[in-house]
Length: 240
Image (cartoon, rainbow, N blue to C red):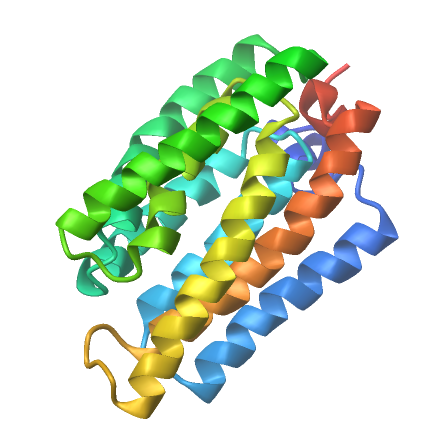
């Protein structure tokens, strides 16, 4: 038993959890399973939701195992985005798949989180806004669904993911924007399916993404506190 508790996998999965974190992670996963039970038409959607939740929760803890769950989630989400004609999301999900091993490598070589100066932070957020406008224009030309929301997935998510794998604390501020936009995006698509306005995609896949983005929004807000406090350094306390 002692040998098992000293392994890397055990430490990554089970050590240094607060009671509050255990409760909220359990609730977030149960929400994903409940959505699948209510609308069981997308097993891929449920897998994406559960592994996406685990990926970002372990990412909040600053642990490399987040990238294992992230790879599974990104592969599932790439399929969902393709059948939903969410081309911005599809392009970003391909990038997410590629970024997972890169993040694994980067986090293995730098255990500390970083933070931009105030001036650099303003330039970063201003640049993200301009990039969003350009992405909106491009996706509108491609006739993607809801390009003003999908552009956030296309460009803001790209910037946030780069900052995430480089362990910059500002990544969570951008993810909050992305998560809010995605809740609206997938909610609108869900309503379109319910009202018969579209037959693209499936209601179960869409609802699983609404639940996932709500979970990730909560996690992003909480992660800003965790990373700012230094708790995410050294893989969330699993390494000295």
